[in-house]
Length: 385
Image 1 (tube, helix red, strand yellow):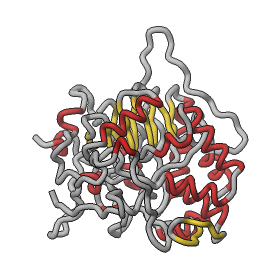
Image 2: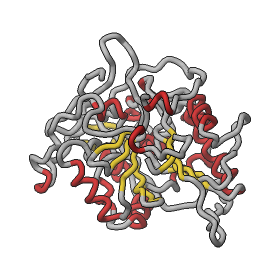
Image 3: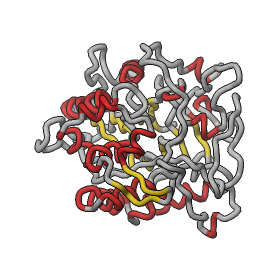
């Protein structure tokens, strides 16, 4: 029995045709990453990715037996030094409770369980990229929302790993739903929280700085140009309101839950912003609040890196993050599983095969971006995987 037989994806409405996206790109060229640190040199960053799903085990081996939740080879392009040349990541902010839709209102921290009461189950959601119908269908399939789209998971906890917007048809609708569920979950004794993805930083930068020039390693560029190049939807920009900006700009970059280090991106760039989770979130929050366009751009550039956990040196990179920030396993979005594994599209035109979360890097990393933008899957998973 295959994992997809055990955990079938939901039947959901189609949000429209999906173009075959490239990985995130910067305008007027691609970002050239510096050489890896000496301890990683020759250690596998430049190694070919695994073909198909060999080298990692899937849901069937890792999913809790009691939980009801849960090779078409085209290698991803690489940059000058073996890293992927088109990359993406997340620049966020402070640790917070569930943000509310109304600006200025206090948020309510997750209530501690009573004596002898265990915390609710923990879920994570991969990159959504504006596919609101698919998100609703998968949340409904997992029992997290009811038929009317309202929180129905009691004390359950759920983290969105970032990238709500761009490429898909309704990024603002996705943000509105997550904000709604954050308030409803808090009222039920659970919580719904989110990390900021690189596309949130890009979206905020496009709204704040527009065509203002920034100096990039790929030449003069702007946030607006990069946002459009990476699937920015004009309808989202037109519907963006002050309370969306306030909510997005407060999202954390990194979090730790039940031993799971939650990140948007598979990069070690977080280490450049602090030695603890609080330092990283405060540093990015301060940058977004006070710094100028070039500092924003540099943050976006750093958090567009990817694939640090792949190859022979991948486990070492994961352990560096775990040693700094705690936890026993990293859970991330950002890099679509079909790109991580090298299985993108077959010659017969079939969509990529994504049975579920991808466990790799000596079982130290779990990838959650199911490639919804390329007709893969929008993944919602219960941890531990």
